[in-house]
Amino acid sequence: MWVLSDVYYRLEQHDVALRVLDVLSKRAPGDARTELNKGQVYIAKGNHELARKYLEKSIEKKPTNNALAYFELGKILHQHDDMASAKQVLVEAVRQEGTNPEYLHKLGAVCLALNEVEEAIQYLKRAEPAGTTIPEIYYNLGRAYQKQGNLAAAESYMKKFQEISSAQRDKKNRSRESGNLLTLAEEQLDRRNKTEARALLEQVLQADPNNWDAHGYLAEMLLALGDLDLAKQHLMRMEELNRDSVVGNYLMALYWYKNKQYHAASDYAERAKRIQPGNSELRHLLGDIYVGLGRHKEATDEYEAAVRLAPNRSDYRQSLEVLKSRFKTNQEPKTQ
Image 1 (spheres, rainbow, N blue to C red):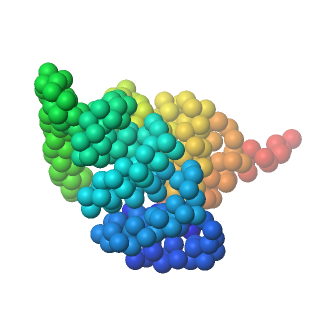
Image 2: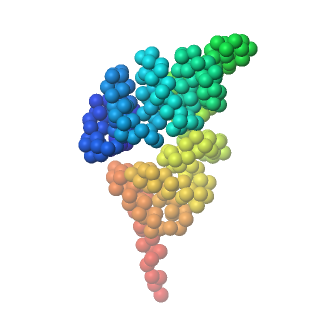
Image 3: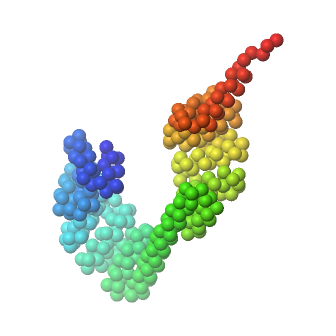
């Protein structure tokens, strides 16, 4: 049920998440996680009073190894300008988890608000390696050095902040652009306009070379066209981005099957099957692969599974009947 509460939280179904957490708190009244998670839900709902109440309860139940509760409480106190209290709980968060850049940055920002410049710089410098993903670290270092009177360092950090922030905005814009192009490509695929779809998908990859979906659509199209070498380029990138994707493993299995490399094909198809055994196309492909390997009994099992999962697919049924007929013929004794 912990996973369920987290799913509802991420889907922003906060009231449902709270009901799940109520059940969990009855089952395990001593578990500090329920109060922590309730606190996070109430933060998302904008109810800081209740959030603070549950975070404090979580800390009361588990004062050690509970850095996230201290951090969330520190953020609330910071937002409400209670800087002294915020610093107190954030110091504890950092004491418990001293390498977390978010905790270090928030504590540095609070010290800066308290005009404790030297201490702020110490915490912010420890957080600095994460500045490329949290550019506000550079911003606050710039402010701290400005207060200290070190204008050269202040200017350097402000410049870094501007560069990283600009790069992040550009990345968001490219992501938005590639998302729009991908939607247009999917519409063209629905209309069976494959030439137009392919051109749009290639534009997506120009804007976002790591767009997994665009690589996937192109790989599938190229496999259907028999352009295996070009398909492999997309498949390799897909595997780098997400090795555990069912679709990615299915397409890689199809690629190796078309190359008659049945052992490699079976490795990928079996990996996909472990994740999603209820996929009829995958089970049929695995049957084809086992036929290529001469493993007729296993091929029969896979074809039967494909027919069971997709009873309206006549091609699946035909594959099963052909294999059974061939297998039966091979088993019949030769007449003298």
